[in-house]
Image (tube, rainbow, N blue to C red; front, side):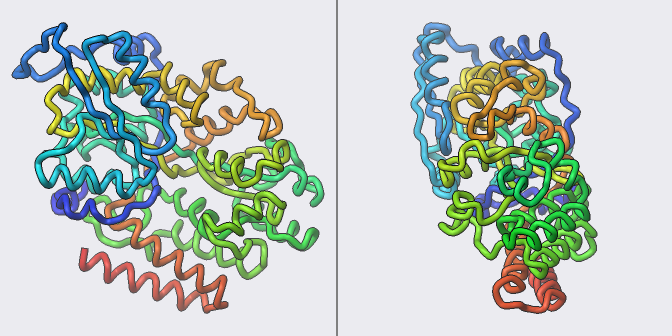
Length: 452
């Protein structure tokens, strides 16, 4: 259990920039459809006893701040048609840092916060330290619907003891292997997902295949260092850089962190990792022209591949990562305490993230659901994506989601991660000594932890 000082993060700390890095977890969520229908579709009856019941005819306006490419405004309009006394005003932004900093400013000032706020997982640890600024959704019946969601996802927004629930789960970002079937075939590799996945189902086999691919084609097998490192890093057991118990830095003794670092160094030195940077034009161009065969990333990465490489439609497929999976991204719907109508707001958000609406969000915006019952629903698993050669991509994303294990990140994860990413960048671009770069990254991380 984390020490209190690590939970009591000041609101000012939220102003720090967060990445999309998400926490992993273990799927033990139940799939009780009857319970879901009762919990997700009915109005909550568990509001605090001290709260005055609203007049059904009272006109209520709720403000809702959303983030990114979501269909929540359309769903809000649908909800208000069935609840004519409710008006929901949606404000959307595509800048996640500004989105969260605007809430921080409002909470610090004590005014200006919305009734409903979409919180990205990269900022979760910081806002969990400001629980007094949010309604506890357990007070409104959240525990009644908990079993409907992936266990690891639900716990990302929970206090350590589970007594406080900051948000309801929306989408997730389970990680998979995106690969070019034409390049696989040219290198003599299986091009079907099961065959390709079997050829790389351990990291040792992955490295062997990657080197053979490079030797045969002259091209790198993998797109870049960051996503390679992430893929192994996020398969850590329970913790990555910091201890859940006391917040101390443990990255130098976590064997999975060293494995991720050494594996990425091996790829750099053997030439099967491309020398491009994440989000760079060269990275996008490489997807389009087949400069590399593999991209290891979350479910939402499919959208980036499609936008960067539209002419490669039909040449991509999806397989599972070796030895497990991780999660990158996803969000939650929260209720800041400035809101004057928490019961009505909760009734809306539990409807917004129910099974039917998560399926709709997947179909219209590609948001991967956090309700595992959907993974076996024909409406979900039978979805075929022409860009990925008609593959039932939802099935692969569901497999990955069920492989994710709980991983604690901590408030200093992003800054610490940068130290190790910079070390790998130096090895890649400057041919720096990997051992010295590792030692320097560890030194920087320890200094940060001591100050933090």
